[in-house]
Amino acid sequence: MPQIISGILKDGSVLKGVDSALSAALVERGSTLILEEGQSLFLEGDDAGGFYIVKSGGMKATRLSPEGGEQLLAVFSPGDSIGEMGMFDDKPRSATIVALRTSSLLHWSKSAFFRFADENPGMYRHLLAVMARRLREANDALAARDFLPLAGQLARVMLRLGEGFGVALPDDTTRISHKLTQSELAAMIGASRENVSRVINDWKRRGVVAHEAGHYRLIDTDTLHELSDG
Image 1 (cartoon, rainbow, N blue to C red):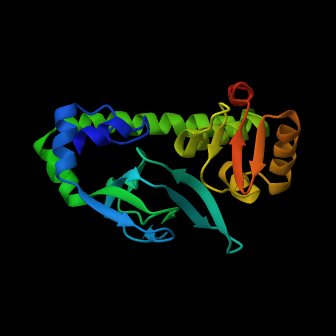
Image 2: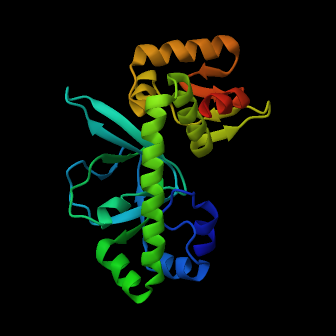
């Protein structure tokens, strides 16, 4: 189990970079949770009682818009951590998390995690580094919205989706296994669906991406990387 988890942890995971023995000991104290497709992990406004790491499957984070519609905030694939910010304040959950497909997660309650951290003070130093990195990433994301053109922001999202939900095809392209609408993509970067549609249609004409049976296929990732770098 510990070896499997350490193998899938992503840079953004709260446990990434933890000493392997410490990580293994913490994983042993976690519990496994299985969610079926469409089942909620927690709802916006719920009390925050712990955090999770996705072992398999996929999850999405949504929030109700002022108009009452569902706004997609993010998607989580194996190796991503969910809900760790709620470990450090008494604020309610800021989003609803729902399984995109049958998913397996590791869970630690707030009390169990801090009991472990009290026994292993090195965990606190690691958490400070994680939070500092998260703050830097948030600042970079805000800067990207201000300075990176829409196509660059959308390219970043496409590449991230390809990394988390991509299936490599024999023709060296990548199929995003999760179906996404243009409205969902627009919500992820705070843009209008019409503007996102214009960018995607241009990419389809140029052979950068394809859209087939509800799935996006990344064809020219070099161009996407160039756009995402500004």
